[in-house]
Image (cartoon, rainbow over all chains, first blue to last red):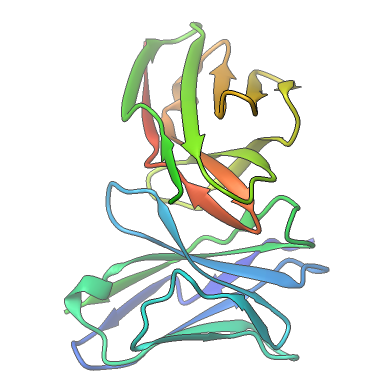
Length: 113
Length: 107
């Protein structure tokens, strides 16, 4: 059973460009979570999705950030008009339910030049 | 608000026992999880406590007291490879993480 997959592993963007981060959950997991980690800090919750639904987006910045988890295909975290402060590691996790253990992917390291 | 407190760093020697404490303030509490992270890599699940008491998994044990909003991770027979960051996290749908404890294991 493959683990949580994320791509790309590293992404470099210039200020003002768009970043798209992809996450494929573990087989059988329908709950997906996105977290952001700045250097030397803990992980901060961004958004929680089930298939085709956003359950909790209380950690998402109000502008430029969006997430989706379509019926088919991976979950996408989209950052429009990136700024240097968006540089961070973005981790995706999945679980079979909202009370079960979350398993993390390897992360996408976003660098904004 | 929701917050978790854990020590920022701990140092111990190989073969020793170390305890990493975590206190939390939160709503919507299902349980307390512990994750290990090496050099910014994928956080790896270690242990989960939904009920009061001790959970043991090999060299690692985790304890929870819901009445005290307190838990700890106990690492026994420390090995060099245990040098990593350890995070406690409150589970309530989403995970709310502490800032992490940097564990350094010395020879």
